[in-house]
Length: 137
Length: 482
Image 1 (cartoon, rainbow over the protein chains, first blue to last red):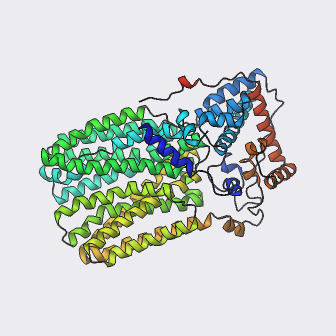
Image 2 (tube, helix red, strand yellow):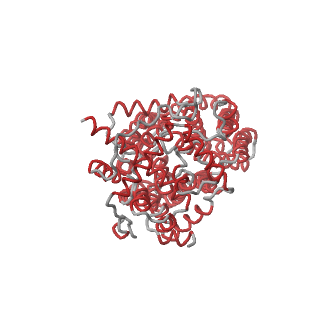
């Protein structure tokens, strides 16, 4: 079964990069699964389509090394999909190089950044949630 | 390092992770009794009338359970829903094989309905989220669902041939029991699969709110609504080809020996369609337009021809096109819905498809009875035309130019907040081309929301830098070795 999976993955990777450089970025502008929930942006009928419906709530005074922040972070990291967790820990937690992370996980440069972007966004959102909930108590 | 080496060296790539799922789907497709079911049913006393009662009982179970089981899959575990589906298939095969009369067999058929309801919409949701988890985008979804469908339909074809041989060599009843071990191993394979976790909410959502959100996504969003209709119509049409296609052969007095190869050809289109989908670029307007034209053309050809060979060719081509379009429609649907309601909405398509199919099949049956099958073919042609129109609409609406016409406040070549959040990692890594980098900075300077968003991402990164984190040692990563 191993050779079959490998052959399949190689075929998939070959078709992965869009043909031109500009398309590589703009392809992500339209639809696809958004990194930040689509409902947080205005629709076509509203005054400012594709802009924030409501600005992100400003965070309170924030000590990145504080125990509450670190506890919340540890929990939210545990909720990430395994590959996202690996990427975000290696890049941001351990300061590893993008190419090193990419090769270790067998990702393309573009996939590595897309995963990093999604993982950070999810962490930021859940972190905000937890800190707000603790602030209420 | 080349891509091939990178894939071989990394234990947890997309391909590796999906192997157990593909094995499970292949084994679950080995249903040996399908080719001889009608034969067996006659042996235990079914008449055309009781066959119709069975079909109705079965058709009532599937749509009732579909959406609830999809919501359950989103909330609980999609993998375990697939295990439950396999168990229902197991129970149905066992009960069917033990049946000696009509009522018990009808009960078995209803349990089979549970299997269909549980598995509908679940596997494609699993594949979509795994692709998103392993590559950060959904671009490879069509490729991978195509592969899963290829494996599944390979199993259908093989088991159709093997089931016929087995029944000829021993008895039709034995094919039911011979199916059991395959499905049992499928359960084991599902249990070894590392399922995606994106659909798990950060905090528990109340049942009522989740159900309401699922239905709201289906009904309120115009984009989702249109794609759902497309997907449901494709489902209706392929079901009609599978269900009524053989009637053309009967009308043309085809020899009995032809039915086996004919059926194998029709079933194999599911897999070939999956393979084709991974080979052609469905983001291209030309390709989609060709599909949208070819589908009604194949249906019209089927209606006009009187030659047996042409009928089989037209049906095979139609089934093939529908297989491709259904994967495309699934992609459009999944792109438009969030992960936490994915399986629920996807099952909604199945329900809608059944709801449309029931009146369609009644009218088709009545018309075919009074005017002949060939004339009734125009119903297929009409449905195919609708599919073509909706497909074309989906391709042309999603273009930036179409957006610009209705959306003057923000021309799409301008960077808005929604696009900025997708580019933060690229910006921080310094890999954006100069013009995009300039647009990014310009937008952020004038937008308090995006300034705050990027600041929060920066704070998150700083918190990560302060944390005492370690990478999972590779050896402990759950990478099942075979």
